[in-house]
Amino acid sequence: MRAIAPKDTVVRGKPIVGNVRVQACNDEICLPPATLPVTIEIGR
Image 1 (cartoon, rainbow, N blue to C red):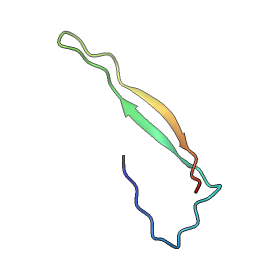
Image 2 (image 1 turned 180 degrees about the vertical axis):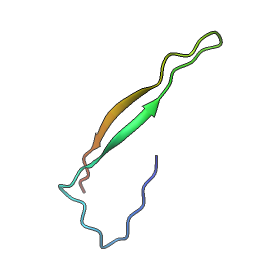
Image 3 (image 1 turned 60 degrees about the horizontal axis):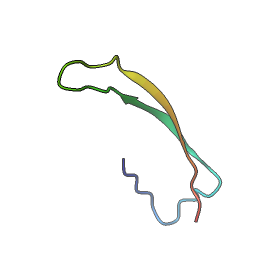
Image 4 (image 1 turned 30 degrees about the vertical axis):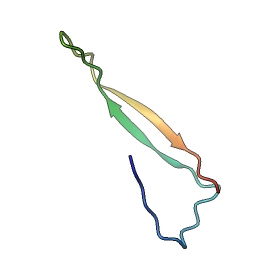
């Protein structure tokens, strides 16, 4: 995942919070989809 913000955007101390939907499969089966919470701390 890639995110681009303008240079004047203030992000320090404000996490990016969301969900990622994933599903694991191999050549025989697929596991049920799952939604995982994600928090990304931003700092410079």
